[in-house]
Length: 271
Ligand code: ADP
Image 1 (cartoon, rainbow, N blue to C red):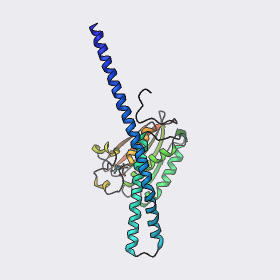
Image 2: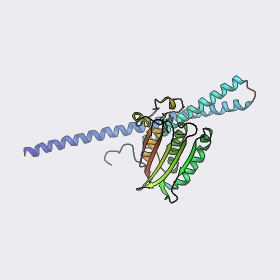
Image 3: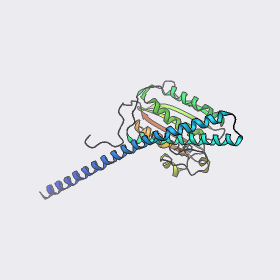
Image 4: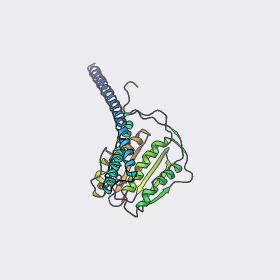
């Protein structure tokens, strides 16, 4: 019986711990939701005046009767406004993904078509730097059920990074395949690479590599965090293989059968 007593004691300890965890979980869920609400309201309030700053500096630039100096100043206003807008959009995307409020739109996706579209979109940026874009997709790639908008956002982030961090004359290869019930998308570049000790942290918010070759490129440091959150929500993950000076390969794995309801960032207790 002393053993039974001890077990009962252990069980009630465990019960208390579970209750405590559930309360913490609930509080986390709620604070996460509030953060999401706050950020999305703020982002909206910031975007409205910013759009008019960008719009009117454009009008000024096109007015044609500016001195060189005035033209340069108006150009600076527009570029800074665009940078700020990109940052706000990234913050909003991330907040949405993290708050568990993101809605999905599963549909039939032909990954080959999607990849072609994305390469076409990035062709001008690649040509400017003389970076070759390649596509590697098997001819019999089956259609999958996924959210095409989210996949586009993930790939656009990875491809624009790959071009950004690949010097003149390099190559960026986009590949798609379906392996073991998952859609596998890889973006491989022959660029500057990422040091071993930084390979985990580049997915952190606002984190940029200490490598001076990448520091000089502008950016918000949010792109890869968004990629990571989105792939998680799409039922998968993103991994990185890279070698300094040789290049990087980002591999995204997502389910081929996405369901309508998003997964909550934190499961509500009792569900
Ligand atoms: P951003 O590109 O806006 O700085 P990201 O979150 O997309 O932010 O990337 C974070 C950092 O990871 C980059 O600043 C860069 O240092 C590194 N990085 C990302 N992609 C690559 C790549 N393809 N090759 C080398 N470094 C990369």
